[in-house]
Length: 299
Ligand code: NAD
Image (cartoon, rainbow, N blue to C red; front, top):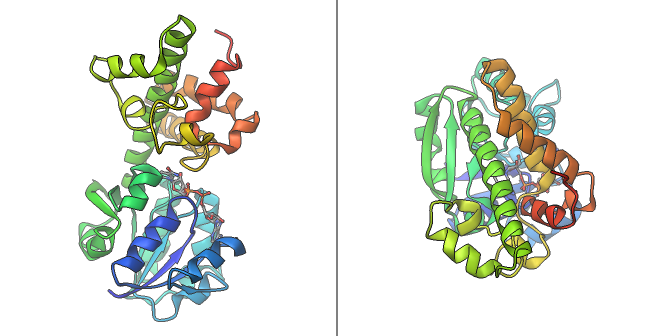
């Protein structure tokens, strides 16, 4: 596989496509935003003016879009990409979407003889840039093996979660847990600082104590505690609060269809829903701490 069509060049897709270019693949890219497409001309990508135009000679299609509706609109329907992709090509959708949407698109792909996997990622924008993402794959194992040389250029860990849609289920569980420990970390830091502690000292203590977790150690939400994280650049870049709210909505849907209660997941979903009503909705999800500090949530 040498020729890749890459669709969706946002916070995650941009650096992922750049890593494929660096690895020597021929990459044709498309994003609906013209300014985003422009940036890729300088990187040596073939910049296309439509998603369909990226397909020319492509033996692999990678997509990294915001949500289920974008993915279904891209691939399905009479004018959808699946109707134009060569039957022997491989499709890798890395977006985080509803498991039933992933299954719907994969079923249609299989009907047309196209191999497809859902391969949502974990690791954030830093992982996307460093090429150290974790891929959580749903679909046939043989399709994962076919995708492996492409995935290995963008990530470090590749897991097979199960059949089509299983990658999304695992990803949703992970992100619900992420939202819960981000909210918990924000609360602990806010309480400590409001009680007179230094956020850096408190973070160091908790990093070596039983409260340690990824939000605290890798993605600290208190501005200035860590370098190179969204909280230290005005909560810009990173993983948007609205995308986290979307994932928590997917967790609620999954909990209903599986009959598995998620009381903490539901609570943190309502916190993010409230947070997203403020301007911070456009900022990284760690900005929940800013809403907490501003007194948005009444206990
Ligand atoms: P983003 O909003 O930065 O990027 C999405 C890109 O898709 C945008 O550039 C947008 O213009 C483009 N787009 C939308 N519709 C399109 C279409 N029809 N055709 C072509 N381009 C289109 O989002 P992101 O942060 O890159 O996240 C992408 C996906 O990855 C989401 O599903 C998100 O939940 C997931 N994710 C994000 C992170 C993170 O840290 N940002 C981490 C893991 C997973």
